[in-house]
Image 1 (cartoon, rainbow, N blue to C red):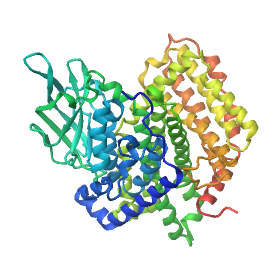
Image 2: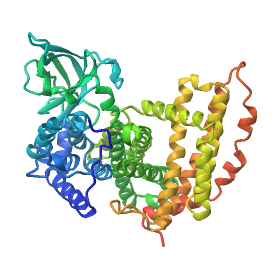
Image 3: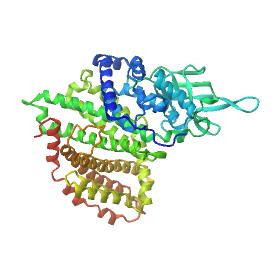
Image 4: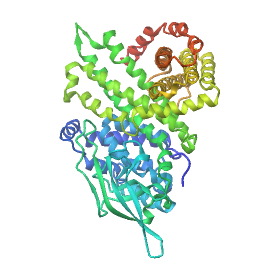
Length: 564
């Protein structure tokens, strides 16, 4: 069983650039703007494109996700993030269809025997077969532990297990009715287990594709398994009961990839809004020259998307360096996904508003992007599940460190500010310090018994950790230490301005919303947390806002090419 990180050794920069260029050229040629709109309107998955993208004799994008020993290119998490973002900029539905094969092969990669990996991962690499990931159920949603699908043992006269009989139903399965193979999670006698089910197995059937709000170029269907019999060697790992562990091992990785979908979709919508605002005149001048337009509909969303990118890149890099072993990156994956998908969804919504009435029409595409990017806040774990995951994990860190977890992070940010006083690390430090006090107030008053408080803590933790990451990225860019696989659209000065804007907002949110939810949750019997709340430095948070509008002006100038 593979226990390390999912990402491979990683592509060299030239190979990654070549793959990204080939991907852009291929999809641009095969999926013309008119065909994209027609497929969206007709709710049809372009299976020909999906299979061509998977075919090693054509594009072979799946090779990036497969280890070299099984015929792939051994790409890492960072490579996968870049590819997912580029695919999402073209079409999130198509990106979902391609990503579903990797997701479906996930349990094989982390849990299968070597012979099984050779058989099925080799088939992806050599034949371009398409997979689906059969986990979600109608009444269980994202709660994999609540599944009802069962796998009963089939035994011979000697009691040897020769196969399994699977019964159940799966819901919302990407590639459900076009996949060649489906990895199905079912309850075996010794616990949840993954099985590989070929689509032509008797008793297996897929429903008609769902009529969805968005990602209509992705095939999504329910699956029915009625006395579906598979051989014993189709049990992944050939040991029962490891299914949930195998699923949890890669959450950090897969959620970073969905975060990249939110990032790509959000930026595609925002770039279209920027382009439109350069052409559209109102009151004798382009919208691009109106601060009321840019500072509401463009600048804040660009800042939040780049904050998300900072966290995605840091997390992907950590996975590639093996720091995500045994699920240690699950929380980081949740933070990346929550930040990027919510930012992408908000940016796409703002892009519609930026286009006015045109944005509400199919012709201008941002309407479609908004419908597509919306799913990223739902699949692979909803935003609410992300908030809970984040809050529970960081809450344990707070308790285990005696309240020092975010205090220590604030000290690190203060040290960064000493070295780089222009990247907003001081504002991020203030946010981290305030978060530590809010968490301690929650501990003293026992407020985490309120589920909603945990949700809001998850949101604030995400803001603080992304502010921290953004400050480090801006400093690294100024020092010339950026990742060579991610060429910067923005220079160090621009990133520093963006980071300052975001960090100020993070400090403001923690100081205001954090204290608000603590105060709003207190009961007459609760311990006195007044001194803790009083120690939140509201004056410092307020003073940190000085220069905010000037920095937003700088970001606007960069986005519109007006910077000197």
